[in-house]
Length: 299
Image (cartoon, rainbow, N blue to C red; front, top):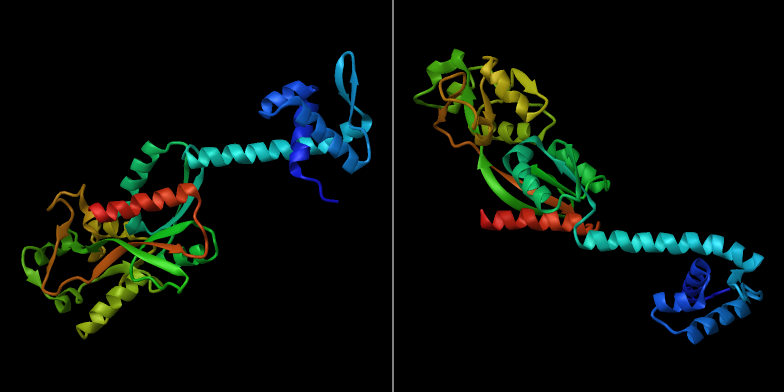
Protein backbone atom coordinates (compact mmCIF):
# COMPACT_ATOMS: atom_id res chain seq x y z
CA UNK A 1 0.00 0.00 0.00
CA UNK A 2 1.34 3.42 -0.97
CA UNK A 3 -0.17 6.45 0.69
CA UNK A 4 1.30 9.93 0.28
CA UNK A 5 3.20 11.27 3.28
CA UNK A 6 1.24 14.51 2.86
CA UNK A 7 -1.90 12.63 3.96
CA UNK A 8 -0.19 11.52 7.15
CA UNK A 9 1.22 15.00 7.75
CA UNK A 10 -2.28 16.50 7.63
CA UNK A 11 -3.58 13.67 9.82
CA UNK A 12 -0.82 14.37 12.40
CA UNK A 13 -1.81 18.02 12.84
CA UNK A 14 -5.55 17.37 12.95
CA UNK A 15 -4.98 14.62 15.55
CA UNK A 16 -2.53 16.68 17.56
CA UNK A 17 -4.76 19.76 17.84
CA UNK A 18 -8.11 17.93 17.57
CA UNK A 19 -9.18 20.60 15.10
CA UNK A 20 -9.49 20.77 11.32
CA UNK A 21 -9.41 24.57 11.44
CA UNK A 22 -6.25 24.81 13.54
CA UNK A 23 -4.51 22.18 11.41
CA UNK A 24 -5.40 24.18 8.29
CA UNK A 25 -3.94 27.38 9.83
CA UNK A 26 -0.66 25.65 10.77
CA UNK A 27 -0.36 24.04 7.34
CA UNK A 28 -1.18 27.35 5.60
CA UNK A 29 -4.06 25.60 3.92
CA UNK A 30 -7.85 25.86 4.10
CA UNK A 31 -10.31 23.70 6.00
CA UNK A 32 -12.05 22.13 2.95
CA UNK A 33 -8.69 20.87 1.65
CA UNK A 34 -7.79 19.44 5.06
CA UNK A 35 -11.20 17.74 5.31
CA UNK A 36 -10.81 16.32 1.79
CA UNK A 37 -7.32 14.96 2.61
CA UNK A 38 -8.56 13.17 5.73
CA UNK A 39 -11.47 11.63 3.79
CA UNK A 40 -8.99 10.39 1.14
CA UNK A 41 -6.80 8.88 3.86
CA UNK A 42 -9.78 7.16 5.49
CA UNK A 43 -10.81 5.75 2.13
CA UNK A 44 -7.27 4.44 1.47
CA UNK A 45 -7.09 2.81 4.92
CA UNK A 46 -10.68 1.58 4.89
CA UNK A 47 -11.60 2.93 8.30
CA UNK A 48 -12.84 6.08 10.07
CA UNK A 49 -10.15 8.05 11.87
CA UNK A 50 -12.07 10.98 13.38
CA UNK A 51 -15.46 11.51 14.92
CA UNK A 52 -17.03 14.97 15.00
CA UNK A 53 -19.26 15.97 17.88
CA UNK A 54 -20.55 19.12 19.50
CA UNK A 55 -17.40 19.12 21.63
CA UNK A 56 -15.09 19.07 18.62
CA UNK A 57 -13.06 16.35 16.91
CA UNK A 58 -11.86 13.13 18.55
CA UNK A 59 -9.93 10.10 17.32
CA UNK A 60 -11.57 6.75 16.81
CA UNK A 61 -9.79 3.67 18.27
CA UNK A 62 -8.29 3.10 14.79
CA UNK A 63 -7.25 6.76 14.68
CA UNK A 64 -5.55 6.46 18.09
CA UNK A 65 -3.55 3.46 16.89
CA UNK A 66 -2.45 5.25 13.74
CA UNK A 67 -1.59 8.46 15.62
CA UNK A 68 0.68 6.58 18.03
CA UNK A 69 2.89 5.65 15.05
CA UNK A 70 2.51 8.76 12.93
CA UNK A 71 3.34 11.06 15.87
CA UNK A 72 6.73 9.38 16.36
CA UNK A 73 7.56 9.56 12.66
CA UNK A 74 6.42 13.17 12.23
CA UNK A 75 8.29 14.40 15.30
CA UNK A 76 11.47 12.57 14.25
CA UNK A 77 11.26 14.25 10.86
CA UNK A 78 10.77 17.64 12.52
CA UNK A 79 13.79 17.04 14.76
CA UNK A 80 15.85 16.07 11.73
CA UNK A 81 14.80 19.23 9.90
CA UNK A 82 15.68 21.32 12.95
CA UNK A 83 19.12 19.71 13.22
CA UNK A 84 19.79 20.41 9.56
CA UNK A 85 18.74 24.04 9.99
CA UNK A 86 21.13 24.39 12.93
CA UNK A 87 23.91 22.69 10.96
CA UNK A 88 23.32 25.01 8.00
CA UNK A 89 23.63 27.95 10.38
CA UNK A 90 26.77 26.37 11.92
CA UNK A 91 25.05 26.43 15.30
CA UNK A 92 25.65 22.71 15.84
CA UNK A 93 27.57 19.79 14.42
CA UNK A 94 30.61 17.64 15.12
CA UNK A 95 33.98 17.64 13.35
CA UNK A 96 36.44 14.78 13.87
CA UNK A 97 40.08 15.47 13.04
CA UNK A 98 43.08 13.16 13.02
CA UNK A 99 46.16 15.28 13.77
CA UNK A 100 49.86 14.63 14.17
CA UNK A 101 51.70 16.29 17.05
CA UNK A 102 53.68 18.69 14.85
CA UNK A 103 50.63 19.67 12.77
CA UNK A 104 48.61 20.28 15.95
CA UNK A 105 51.15 22.61 17.58
CA UNK A 106 52.49 24.33 14.45
CA UNK A 107 49.22 25.09 12.69
CA UNK A 108 46.02 23.52 13.93
CA UNK A 109 45.67 24.86 17.49
CA UNK A 110 45.33 28.58 16.62
CA UNK A 111 42.94 27.73 13.78
CA UNK A 112 40.76 25.64 16.11
CA UNK A 113 40.75 28.49 18.63
CA UNK A 114 39.56 30.93 15.95
CA UNK A 115 36.96 28.42 14.68
CA UNK A 116 35.55 27.84 18.18
CA UNK A 117 35.21 31.57 18.74
CA UNK A 118 33.24 31.90 15.51
CA UNK A 119 31.15 28.72 15.90
CA UNK A 120 30.91 27.78 19.60
CA UNK A 121 28.06 25.35 18.95
CA UNK A 122 30.22 23.01 16.88
CA UNK A 123 31.97 20.24 18.81
CA UNK A 124 35.51 19.28 17.86
CA UNK A 125 37.03 15.83 18.29
CA UNK A 126 40.80 15.84 17.83
CA UNK A 127 42.61 12.48 17.85
CA UNK A 128 46.40 12.45 18.24
CA UNK A 129 47.84 10.16 15.56
CA UNK A 130 51.05 9.57 13.70
CA UNK A 131 50.71 10.35 9.99
CA UNK A 132 50.16 6.67 8.97
CA UNK A 133 47.61 6.22 11.78
CA UNK A 134 45.73 9.37 10.71
CA UNK A 135 45.61 8.20 7.09
CA UNK A 136 44.28 4.79 8.23
CA UNK A 137 41.64 6.50 10.40
CA UNK A 138 40.58 8.58 7.40
CA UNK A 139 40.40 5.49 5.20
CA UNK A 140 38.19 3.74 7.76
CA UNK A 141 35.86 6.72 8.17
CA UNK A 142 36.88 7.43 11.78
CA UNK A 143 37.76 11.08 11.09
CA UNK A 144 36.44 13.71 8.68
CA UNK A 145 39.94 14.67 7.57
CA UNK A 146 43.57 14.47 8.69
CA UNK A 147 46.01 17.31 9.35
CA UNK A 148 49.47 15.78 9.37
CA UNK A 149 53.07 16.25 8.28
CA UNK A 150 54.67 14.80 5.19
CA UNK A 151 55.81 12.37 4.01
CA UNK A 152 52.37 10.77 3.80
CA UNK A 153 51.26 7.73 1.82
CA UNK A 154 47.79 8.36 0.41
CA UNK A 155 45.49 6.42 -1.90
CA UNK A 156 44.06 7.72 -5.21
CA UNK A 157 40.77 8.37 -3.39
CA UNK A 158 42.44 10.89 -1.08
CA UNK A 159 43.15 14.54 -1.80
CA UNK A 160 46.21 16.15 -0.18
CA UNK A 161 46.40 19.94 0.20
CA UNK A 162 49.59 21.55 1.52
CA UNK A 163 48.83 24.11 4.25
CA UNK A 164 52.39 25.27 5.02
CA UNK A 165 56.00 24.11 4.85
CA UNK A 166 58.60 23.96 7.59
CA UNK A 167 62.15 22.87 8.36
CA UNK A 168 62.92 21.53 11.80
CA UNK A 169 65.69 22.92 13.98
CA UNK A 170 68.56 20.83 15.34
CA UNK A 171 68.93 21.43 19.10
CA UNK A 172 71.06 20.22 22.00
CA UNK A 173 71.25 20.63 25.77
CA UNK A 174 74.05 22.14 27.91
CA UNK A 175 76.15 18.94 27.79
CA UNK A 176 76.67 19.47 24.05
CA UNK A 177 76.97 23.26 24.16
CA UNK A 178 80.43 23.08 22.55
CA UNK A 179 78.65 22.25 19.26
CA UNK A 180 76.73 25.54 19.28
CA UNK A 181 77.98 28.81 17.88
CA UNK A 182 79.63 27.30 14.83
CA UNK A 183 78.56 25.41 11.74
CA UNK A 184 78.82 21.65 12.11
CA UNK A 185 78.43 18.90 9.54
CA UNK A 186 75.84 16.15 9.68
CA UNK A 187 78.72 13.67 9.90
CA UNK A 188 79.95 15.37 13.09
CA UNK A 189 76.43 15.46 14.54
CA UNK A 190 76.05 11.74 13.85
CA UNK A 191 78.91 11.02 16.28
CA UNK A 192 76.69 12.15 19.17
CA UNK A 193 73.56 10.51 20.61
CA UNK A 194 70.50 11.31 18.49
CA UNK A 195 66.87 11.42 19.63
CA UNK A 196 64.29 10.64 16.95
CA UNK A 197 60.76 9.32 16.56
CA UNK A 198 60.31 5.56 16.26
CA UNK A 199 61.37 3.57 13.22
CA UNK A 200 57.73 2.98 12.21
CA UNK A 201 57.06 6.71 11.73
CA UNK A 202 57.30 8.79 8.57
CA UNK A 203 59.50 11.28 10.45
CA UNK A 204 62.08 8.57 11.03
CA UNK A 205 61.89 7.62 7.33
CA UNK A 206 62.47 11.26 6.32
CA UNK A 207 65.59 11.63 8.48
CA UNK A 208 66.84 8.15 7.62
CA UNK A 209 66.78 9.05 3.92
CA UNK A 210 68.47 12.39 4.63
CA UNK A 211 71.32 10.72 6.51
CA UNK A 212 71.59 8.14 3.74
CA UNK A 213 71.91 10.86 1.09
CA UNK A 214 75.04 12.01 2.94
CA UNK A 215 76.38 8.45 3.22
CA UNK A 216 75.49 8.23 6.89
CA UNK A 217 73.34 5.85 8.92
CA UNK A 218 70.67 7.16 11.27
CA UNK A 219 70.90 5.08 14.43
CA UNK A 220 68.88 6.84 17.15
CA UNK A 221 70.07 6.30 20.70
CA UNK A 222 66.58 7.17 21.96
CA UNK A 223 63.28 6.72 20.14
CA UNK A 224 60.50 9.03 21.28
CA UNK A 225 56.85 8.05 20.98
CA UNK A 226 55.66 11.59 20.11
CA UNK A 227 57.32 14.76 18.83
CA UNK A 228 56.62 16.71 22.02
CA UNK A 229 58.78 14.26 24.01
CA UNK A 230 61.94 15.22 22.12
CA UNK A 231 62.36 18.70 23.64
CA UNK A 232 62.39 17.66 27.34
CA UNK A 233 64.75 14.78 26.50
CA UNK A 234 67.14 17.21 24.81
CA UNK A 235 66.92 19.62 27.76
CA UNK A 236 67.97 16.76 30.01
CA UNK A 237 71.07 16.06 27.89
CA UNK A 238 69.90 12.73 26.52
CA UNK A 239 70.97 13.64 23.00
CA UNK A 240 70.51 15.88 19.96
CA UNK A 241 67.09 16.20 18.39
CA UNK A 242 65.13 17.98 15.67
CA UNK A 243 62.00 19.98 16.50
CA UNK A 244 59.91 22.65 14.74
CA UNK A 245 60.70 26.27 15.62
CA UNK A 246 57.22 26.59 17.19
CA UNK A 247 58.26 24.12 19.88
CA UNK A 248 61.02 26.56 20.97
CA UNK A 249 58.93 29.73 21.34
CA UNK A 250 59.02 29.61 25.14
CA UNK A 251 62.65 28.50 25.33
CA UNK A 252 65.38 31.05 26.11
CA UNK A 253 68.57 30.50 24.14
CA UNK A 254 71.39 29.42 26.42
CA UNK A 255 69.13 28.40 29.32
CA UNK A 256 68.87 24.71 28.59
CA UNK A 257 68.46 24.63 24.80
CA UNK A 258 71.03 25.51 22.15
CA UNK A 259 70.22 25.76 18.46
CA UNK A 260 72.74 24.09 16.18
CA UNK A 261 73.85 25.37 12.79
CA UNK A 262 74.22 22.57 10.28
CA UNK A 263 76.28 22.69 7.10
CA UNK A 264 73.62 20.57 5.38
CA UNK A 265 70.08 21.89 5.00
CA UNK A 266 67.46 20.04 7.04
CA UNK A 267 64.86 18.50 4.67
CA UNK A 268 61.71 20.50 4.14
CA UNK A 269 58.43 19.09 5.38
CA UNK A 270 54.84 20.11 4.81
CA UNK A 271 51.79 20.27 7.04
CA UNK A 272 48.92 19.10 4.88
CA UNK A 273 45.20 18.44 5.01
CA UNK A 274 44.10 15.06 3.66
CA UNK A 275 40.47 14.20 2.97
CA UNK A 276 38.76 11.21 1.41
CA UNK A 277 37.06 12.28 -1.81
CA UNK A 278 34.46 9.49 -1.56
CA UNK A 279 33.34 10.48 1.97
CA UNK A 280 31.29 13.71 1.82
CA UNK A 281 31.96 16.20 4.61
CA UNK A 282 29.28 17.50 6.93
CA UNK A 283 28.49 21.22 6.75
CA UNK A 284 30.57 21.87 9.87
CA UNK A 285 33.56 19.83 8.64
CA UNK A 286 33.44 21.50 5.23
CA UNK A 287 33.51 24.91 6.92
CA UNK A 288 36.56 24.02 9.00
CA UNK A 289 38.28 22.67 5.90
CA UNK A 290 37.53 25.98 4.17
CA UNK A 291 39.01 27.94 7.10
CA UNK A 292 42.20 25.84 7.00
CA UNK A 293 42.62 26.21 3.24
CA UNK A 294 41.98 29.95 3.39
CA UNK A 295 44.62 30.28 6.09
CA UNK A 296 47.08 28.56 3.76
CA UNK A 297 46.24 30.98 0.93
CA UNK A 298 46.64 34.07 3.13
CA UNK A 299 49.75 32.98 5.06
